Structures are given as structure tokens and as C-alpha cells.
Amino acid sequence: VFLYLAADLGRSIRVVFDRNQDLLIVTISGILGAKKTTHPISAVRHAEIRHGRPVAGAHQHLGRPMRPVVLTTDDTEIPLNDFFETGTDATEITSTINAWLDAR
Image (tube, rainbow, N blue to C red; front, side, top):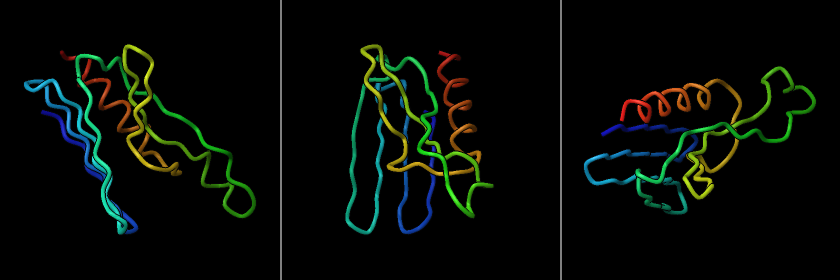
């Protein structure tokens, strides 16, 4: 089992990769409730980064917003965050997920 957790600004993200049950479970919770999706891990190809629109004005130094996604064998894109963010988190989690998937 591989688990990714993130929390900030009143929301939390929980991503569970469970090989034994062949499940990828993504739960995004916030003040308005929670959204949970499940997918078979056997259909997961790899993780990638998706980029949002560039940041303008005084916040340009933050870099281009991005979020991690998981791609399945039928090219379904499963976002692991409900919005784009700046920083290195998306890059780090994408690399970690791909290393875990490569170990199967």
C-alpha cells in the first residue's frame, strides 16, 4: 500500500494505492464535503504533471501552477488534486508514484 496525504486551506487529499485489492482511491475533502473516486491499479500506466495557466503580475516568481494526474491504459486522466498549485509538490509526488508503480 502506498499513501499520499496533503492538507491545506480547509481541504485534504488522500490517495491510496492498494495493490492487494487492485484499487486506487482518491478522496478530496473540504468544507463543502468530500469526493471519492476509485479505479483499478492494474489500469494505471503512470503519473504525469499537468500545467495550469501561467501566474501573472506580482506572483510570477512562484512559477507555473501544476497538479499531478494519473493516466490509465484507456487514457483516462485522474487528477490527484482539485486545483493547480505552484511549488514542487506535484513534481515530487509524480516521481514518487512512478517509482512505486515501476516496482510492481
